[in-house]
Amino acid sequence: MSSRSGWVVPIDRVSPREAVALAERADGAGFRGALAADLFQPWLPSLGQAPFVWSLLSAIGEHTAGDLFAGMTVPGYRLHPATLAQAAATLAALHPDRVWLSVAPGEAINEHVTGASWPEAPERIERMFEAVEAIRRLFAASSSGRDSRYRGEYVTLETARLWTTPAVPPRVLVATGGPATARRAGRVADGLLAVGVRPDQGRRLLQRLSEGAEAAGRDPAGLLRIAHVNVSWAPDQAQAIRQALARFPIGAMRFARGDLRSPQLVEQIAALVGPEDLDERLLVSSDPDRHGELLSQFLDAGYDQVYVHNVGDNHAEFIDMYAARVLPLLG
Image (cartoon, rainbow, N blue to C red):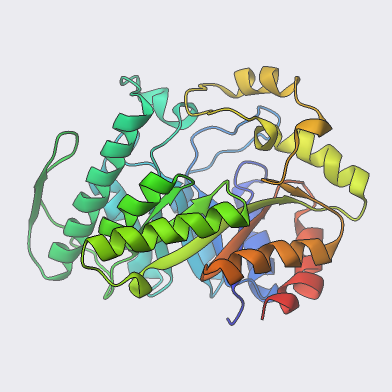
């Protein structure tokens, strides 16, 4: 498992059984692991799927040997931080030394469903960092056979212990594209999942991550640095453009989307998106060399690994092409 590139599961576009089969194909093709996002709804009605990520990752783990990465999971709305910690710990007990967890501030499309008040972005970030602290404390205490308690402004744990634990708890990363959040992640988290950024922006995120670690007296070298990269690949350039607009129009929406609440609303906004709105945040290219160049730029910037998400529906074809033409370029 020498590859430094992982595969992002198209969790909102394929059935759970197909996702497992594709993950097995990616594992056999040389990808180092599978990242699956924590969704309650797809971004578009036409995408059609939104399974429970923890069940899906458990099934994938039984058919693969690589890492299992819960991406952009959100503590405190649908799932309390203690429940997320329990889910991650159980998955890691089933698949030792393979499980990571990344937390994010969240988006209303997935989290508003409980009917709770949906806060402004600054509060969502505060909630996320309280959850990071609570989860890491719970992991540490439970691994030592002790109870954990936590009381913050937004998160409370009362006499909590995880009774099913792995020998080594999962690392808890912060998923972000913001420099201020990356710096704070360096102070308290186990690493960073960079999302929605170009390589030059990703480099700045790593600088802020290291600054935060050093300010807290931590060794930046011990932090895990992962990039999540969206691409649209097809054998034909016109097809690559069409699938980007049809299946991932949010990649061309140049505004914060954290308050959008329904796939139907996103679909209406997507009708306004055209090819001219696609920018370098989403590589749209039929040229494998350009894909290799993009991923190499993130690795050269200091990222340990890059997880790549192809936004089209040509999943098996994409996996096979990357195995033959892109992964060998990454060393």
